[in-house]
Amino acid sequence: MKKKISILAATLVSAVLLTGCGDKEFIKDIKAGDYVTLGNYKGIEASAKAPSVQDGLVDYYIEQQYLTPNMLTKEEAGRAIEEGDIVNIDFVGYQDGEAFAGGTGQGYNLTIGSGRFIEGFEEGLIGVEVGETVSLDLTFPDPYKGNPDLSGAPVVFDVTVNGILPELTDELVLSLGVGSCQTAQELKDLVYDLYYQNAVANYENEIEMIMSSTIMAESTFKKEPPKGLVERYQHSIEVTQNRQAANSGMTLAQYMLATTGLDEAGYRAEFEKAATEMAQRYIMYQAIADIEGLTPTEEEVQQEIDAMVEIYGYASEEELLKEESRENISEDLMRKKVVAFLMENGNIQNTETIID
Image (cartoon, rainbow, N blue to C red; front, top):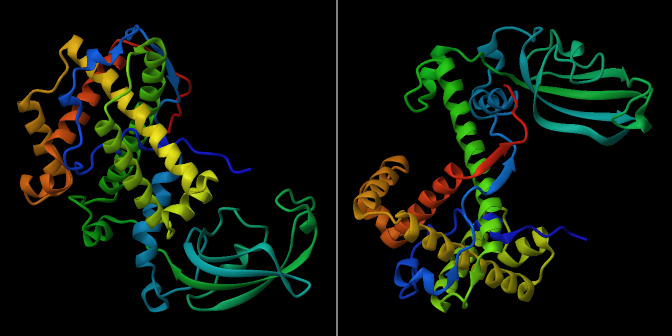
C-alpha cells in the first residue's frame, strides 16, 4: 500500500503566498477570538534534529552543477587519466555476456583512487584518455554485500570516459560568474550557506508544526472557519500540488495517485480537509498575535515587500504585487512573527547535531 503524504505539512508554510482569489476572505477580515478560545501557548515542548549540512553535499553540488558542465575534452586535458582525477564515465557491466542489474551508469562522476568501485575498476582507468572506451575484466569480492549473487563472480565492464572534471580554482570560479563569488572558497561558502539556510527552514517548519499542533489540540474552536478563507487555502494547496505535478512531468491526478494513492475524489477531499485545518491554524495564529501585539504594521509589511523584491529579483514592487497580494504577504508575516514568539517562549530540544 502506498504511504500517504501529509498534504497539510507539505503546503502549510509556502502555499499561502499565492495570488489572492478575488473576494475570498483573509485573516484580517475576521475577529479571531470569535472562532477560537486559546489554550496554553507558552512553554510548548518540541524537539527536532538540529539543522546541519551533510558531509560531502557541498562538494557534490559543485561537482554536478559547475564542474561536470565544464569537464575537459581530450584536447583540453592534454593527458591521460591520473590518480586523483574526477572522471565522468558511462559503463555497462556484463556477467556471462549479459548486462546485470545495478551494473550500468551514464554520466557518472568517479574519483580515481576513492575505492568506490570494486578492485581493479578505478585502477583500470589510469592511463586511459578522454573519449576512449576500455573493457575491464574484473572479479567481484566474495562475499559481496551489495548483491550476494555477484559474490566472487567474474565480470566485464565496458567503460567510456566522457571527460575529466576541471579542478575548482579561483580562475574557474571567476569564469562561472556565480553571484559575487571570486574564489573557490567563496563558492563553497555560498553553496554551504544555501544548504544550511534550507536546513534551518526545514527545522523551523518541523518545530512550527509540532508546536502549533500542540496548541491547536489544547484550544477550542467555537465554529467552522469562514468558507471564503477555506476556499482560498484550498486554492493555494491545489496550485502548489499542480506545480509539483508539472515538475514531475505528470498531471495532478497522476501525481496524487503516485504519491498518495488517492483518486480525484480522495485527494480533493484531502485538500479540503487540509485547507480547513490550515484556516484554523492561521486563525489561532491571529488570536495569539492579537493578544501579544504581533500583528504586522504597515511599515513592517512594506519592509517585507522591499526585501522580497530584492531577494527574488523582481524589477519593482509592482511586479511582485502582480503575483503576491499585500494581504497574503501581511498574513504570512504575521505567521512568521507568531512562530518566532512561540519558539522564543517554548522549550525546544535539538535531538542531534552533526558536526561538518
